[in-house]
Length: 352
Image: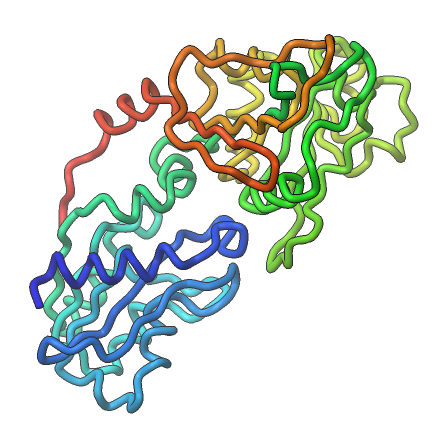
């Protein structure tokens, strides 16, 4: 079996991982091959659980079969103990002859360390710099390479383009099937952002429901430029992170002064360790992010219903990159190609 085929099998395994379960960990797949025979396959299944390499090893009929085998893995094995033991160290006892890696870890703190440990132990290591891991884990790469969160925008609107029937009042747009998909999307993110208008009108919980979580709930964030929420009871905002341009309001607990607009908010969330954020605001907030080019992905849920009149939604000046039918709702997915092109151009050359 050639190395590209082995890595392709590992990528197929990685794609089986559900991003709402892996959370801030990357989706990774691993395959153990010997004499052109696939002996075991594994992938990282959940945040805090065993990594792909360990799952593949545990799927061997006999652990001794790993001796002299080749391990194909989409991302460099971790070299630092975290929630589980470091894979690169554990693998030293398996007797592997070769390890073929799709890409190095983009985290500057651990970049290349797994390769070093394996090679120091006499294991042959090849890094092929494929795009599979990057395509499967855009938020992971964005955060560790650009030191900024990945930004996903989300909006629901009627078939004729309205987000609500009456300004200032909440209108239920999507059905339960689409709502569950939104909860799966939420579960992928470190934080969820709304605007103060959405907070006041919808009173959103912004929690993940109907999905088995293996990690914490996303941090809830509200953008309140003018300080409209300053007189809300403190108990209602205690679990929220609020960004405002109102200096007096910013003196309250969990309230941060917006000194550099939306880019400053995103930068601050990145400093707080938020790897990815979902913006669930109304059309005003969504448009602000679009105009500022502060987005990587946009999901628009178009319900199979009409509203006679109301508040207009958002129209993107590009064709959707993907369209899926979810229950009675059409979900259009847009990728910010301008940002994607800039990120591709800024990729550092592979050094191993």
